[in-house]
Image (cartoon, rainbow, N blue to C red; front, side, top):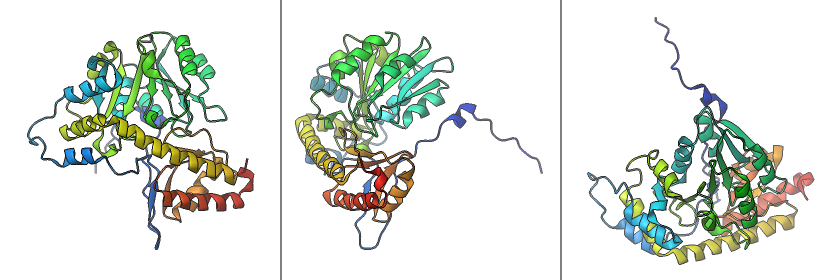
Length: 365
């Protein structure tokens, strides 16, 4: 028997964990399951979107519009930018991969906050870049002072996340403006705004207003969250034309199906309604966060469609307690993220959290 050598894979694969999606809820007799682990939009889809995607689509033998002309045109109209400054991709996840590919390799460094979106170490690690994960401040906010100090002459990419996933706080406009002034103009700053529609803090950073002054800024957005189109896999970026030209070389050709493009375009046609629905979820989020704080929990500023419980080494135990009640939450090792979902599910979370706090009073603020 011939012993074969193992397939040679890149050593960088050993330096970061794979992305692990949110778990499905466990089945518990007598309890309706609630998946509060993936930050999905729990409201019913817009009727106009459902109608559009239920119509007979283009023949499956034909490729979709690779340039996504109609959708990019609509993005430009809604946000007041030229379509040439936009790109459409298979979810914001592909954007993260592509933007890392055009900025990073083994000679470069990447800077990002931590904890934040789990794909940041994955995409930069796969590129071979040296990673600087800058710890958040105790209140769950970016430590922008430390992040600015971490930028060197070898830095290729800086990721910011506002609202920050999983902790919740936003960057203020003053903070973002000051940070961009400190970052060299050749370093690309990717502002991940996957949850921007849910943010109600009046001081929230308005990245789109800073694009002209800072050509090294790129906004990463998605139709998965506020638009409720997670299954359609549509993301988009707004950036300087040179950055868009680079991204076009890195994204997957024909990645966004014609049905997905149509759904996103129709959703933008109803953008005011999307924002109104996001405000409904934001109000629900605030009520839920206040209820947790009233129990005694320390909950950071919540500005996405989720809240964060900093549980430390008790995260596994809390996840198990939730699963026994047919609730799936996102355990990230040093805390648990809970997505805003149907009211019955949130009320059951509050029952679990109250009992957990009684058993672990040291967690109370």
